Length: 537
Image 1 (cartoon, rainbow, N blue to C red):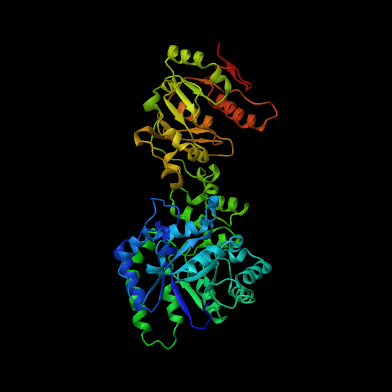
Image 2 (tube, rainbow, N blue to C red; image 1 turned 120 degrees about the horizontal axis):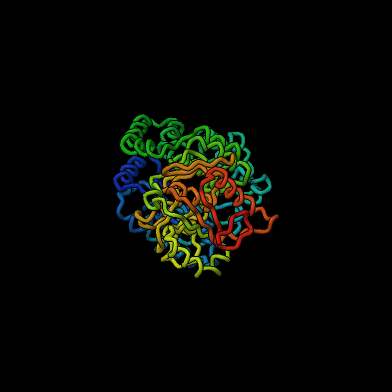
């Protein structure tokens, strides 16, 4: 175990900073960065992750493969390391030794000299075999306890006691939610030191603009290992800035001025442009997140994806505040009230396709399937433009002109099903990248019709967008039909629910609104229904 009072400095810019650019750093930047770290006498550099999930959208430092490492010009005075996520190793009940061998082939011959294991509290008590496997390969091993602010004192003590019996080198704690204050850092250090007698490290986040103060408080409390990133580039608001931390390490260092100059040159040449593009750094939203135990990646997502309108930020944050948002879950951000609360926009005018034809909208009810032959004959006879909601299969695909979907969860879950089908109307311009990057449909088959959800029950329909009271596909389909100047709208497969079922209310509401707002519009059901609709005979 490493146990001395010498301050050790790990720079993890390429690993933590990768959360902003998906770990896509060019080799020129990396080599300049490594050379700068060498000049700064920062001996430990965490090059990136070694993720098990080989997501092709991620860049090289997400995997930090041996092939990639060999392409780099690594100064001899640097020790290179990577981080792994413990949770990845416990999925699917695979044999840990097999996963370790596949993740780190020929580790003894690798340039990787240290491995940091990122763990949530419950994972700490499972990582013994991973620690043992890594130590057998003669690398420095650090255990990184995440979300330390969410642990009770007795939980921190249980971690200290358990790990005191394990053979590794550094026990790190991470202020993942960025809500620690200097006094908390001192308390945590004392608790971890109760049983664990080895080296301790701190990884601070800058939500409250306290990353540097917390790191220095840790140093003054006896913490030996300190993390930082160039220009603070890191997940969410970022971390302790390397260029600031080096001013406080090595008080008698006569070359400090030249070191600061070299890192400023690096920032000017590479990181100014990155910061301008990804805009990390603390702000009122990150502060709100820290105070309300909201994972900073939620803020990072809404700030960088322009499809979240700025005036909806407060609504999104207050929604997150009401739920347990300490762990990042992208699905929480893609609720309709978060995405469709701003100004609607789209680039497709339904009239270009519908041109005043009468419409048939097909729902998911059983009657559409049981009356499919009748429906198909009705479509042929009346030359109708057919809209089918979501992925319904109630009539033959050849009869369907357009499918509609607007609920973000539904679009994301069904996106693969749409690929081989007819044209799809969705509010494409308003969807976050989490969804649009997964859409593989040909652009010519996507009809981008905007939507804004107004909970005050109003309805407005414009050429290329609508304002409707909910995110139901039927509401969206009505808006498209009306924008297309349809004179009559027929419905099939809208069976309805029992009168006391709440699902009945929202759908009936839109029927009532359409009939009230568009009095000249003919609205009929051609299949049996429990809704208050005219039956076409």
